[in-house]
Length: 94
Image (cartoon, rainbow, N blue to C red; front, top):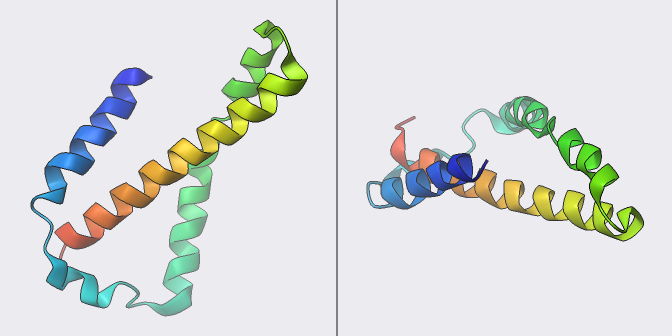
């Protein structure tokens, strides 16, 4: 798990240097239909947070630790998705 997060962080930092700001001019070329299509595809990437709830059986205080774990992991994944999308948008020409 730590390896995967480090790999994403290395990609974000490394490719940030190669990003071209001129590629950000056409961020939403397909309109809202394209945004909703991309959002629906990314939604299925979030199916993995059940592992956090499964690990709650081993915590000392699941009523307090489980919401913190789920919300914390969602925040971390959302930040990584946004950073990756921002870097890829600047790398790939439309």
